[in-house]
Length: 280
Image (cartoon, rainbow, N blue to C red; front, side, top):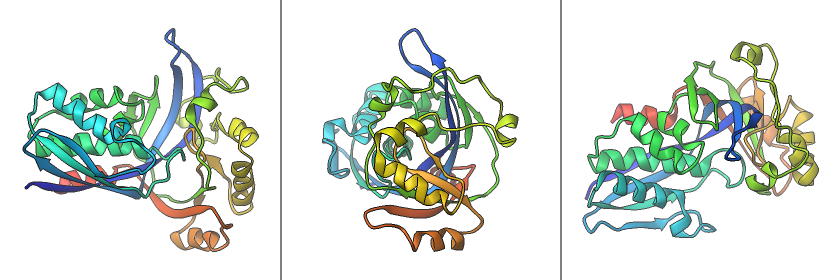
């Protein structure tokens, strides 16, 4: 039986703007993705009977709704592959935190099963499949830090310096749909450039909405801001701050309030998944 164990990394949105809406209602975004060396671990094993099974995964997500299962079935349909797979996910990335865990898991399954099933699809094809599962999946498929526009699918790879981050999850999930429906969400940010971001422009437009609607997240932002400039990532509840070293981040976490979860990770321009695939 062929088995492959692969990482599914978390991501940060270093800023996140909404610049408008398409006619179909989808929001147009600008953001900058960076990958973290904090990962879910996915074990894929080939089945000869064509079934897609999830013996281990997110306990609160039904198997048929799980993006990993949907990704495997989509790859089967696209390629006509008659093989199946067991998909086991060791979840470390908190759900509803804005770290992209579900999208990353799906991308890792697409990349892993493409290899195990010998489908032969290139990254462009896999990214197009991933977009059918979610707007963030393509960036995880490609595995390069990227300046993203459109609904998040227009990706320009960028090289970013190695930076340490401390990341806090304040123990509450944030439903993305609620944030996008918020009447006070800023939806008309003027487009900026990468140079403008590096010069200090850019924010997360969801942060004021999250602080208003989720007091525990607002408390966490206030707490971490006592140590360093703090920003929300994505449209979830996790927040992050840049630190000078792993040790500085660990020192901050020693005072973490009860009920919160935190970790220190390094940002990477090439994702841990792509690093692993290249090494295979």
